[in-house]
Length: 372
Image (tube, rainbow, N blue to C red; front, side, top):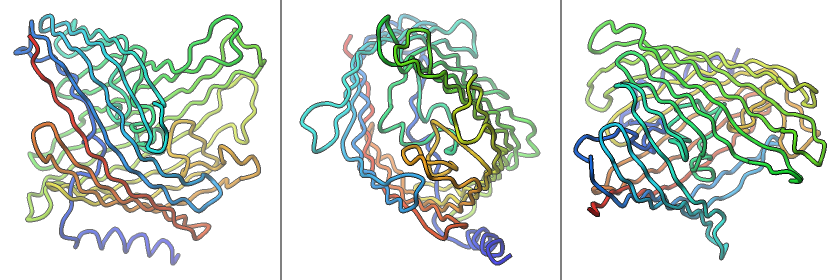
């Protein structure tokens, strides 16, 4: 009972705080719109993130680490017309303290817009934060370490429906390769249900991810691995236009995990969770509060702090997890094409009495230069 009173107290207290802003990860999204004014033009497009992120994790579920480095993605982009865009380049990832690049990936993508609200992308797709998947299913760390996703993507964007259906093929296999193929299939959709007024609106979110490892070319004879995560939630947005707060968002989710592998080798075959978030939006600074309760939950692509098992310690088994989250962020566009993000995040384990935390600083450079 005391723990529940504490949770309620924190949520009430946030109503009296003074300087909040956008704490969601859409700050890092790429724009996928084909702009009419760019038709027939050739651009040099550069996406660059210089990052420092320190994860201080003290529980048995996962280990903490520090990520310091940068990734840069220069591309030549050609908009043929208002329906077709072609881009090609390279993605480079380097960590400080390592002389060589960790990743050097050639890129090529074709984006076709057959309908007013539909975009089809083949090649490197708009991934990571663009998918708008909740943290327990798709962790933010992938923006730093797995920025490039390759495959096929369908994007639907209309007044009442926003949907992202994608296939990200992470590992291709050839005959004789000693490893499995690996890919992710996801669907993220938001449906605007009802707008009571200019200030109050309701929407429903459907989020699904399948992680698969397998294939017939497999010399290690490892069993097939298929894990399914999904979340269904409602987002309530209230525009207040107060002195320090512009918008409040409350979003509760029901989250599910299932092991769909033919041979079950994981500790649990299914699990459920409740994930509720409260966000306060303003211009530059912000606050995020969240509550997580799960039973036998596993997520191969989500933040490992939410799992009931450890990915590298086979003896760890915490079937029930209860976590209270608090995050503070500062995000600002400094100049044209240059942005700054600073975040502090805490994860309080209400069952084991431990608190994990992280903090990070990211400087972004995103700009297009007209070549022709």
